[in-house]
Length: 89
Image (cartoon, helix red, strand yellow):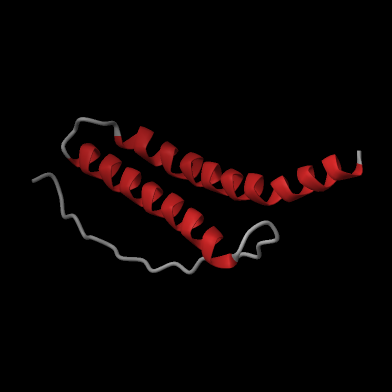
């Protein structure tokens, strides 16, 4: 063993307004994105411990994947603006 590994558990609260769909539908979509993000980060952490994946690359992936989640959320909400624009034409 190369060091002491201390698992850290964090509980995050996600809050957002939705104008495109029902809150329960959007919660389900974003919840799936957050679950997928957590699974990927956990897998990268596990592979980093087993020396199959560079730790530096795992650290770089974390904020990139988070920004992808944010972009998915933005695209969902911007869908309403695109639909309203098409109606005006």
